[in-house]
View 1: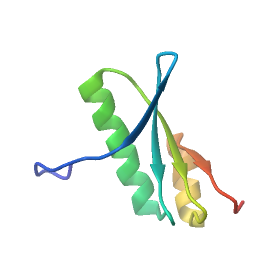
View 2: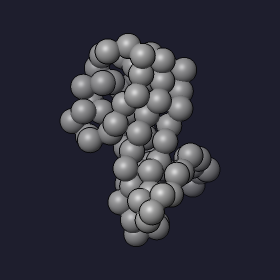
View 3: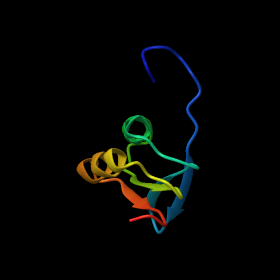
Length: 80
């Protein structure tokens, strides 16, 4: 993913031909958002399907939320 072979893990929901990648974390930083976005692009390149991206976390840093909004990643959290 970062120029070297490695294992990439993602949680996936497929519903009515819609692919949704879900990242569940205890806290989310801006770097986490960009890493997840890159995983989404890898998934699209390998599978040929553009997935929806969703992050679920009780704490999302303010800069992470802004980055997710810019990248079109859905964020589900208790804190607004």
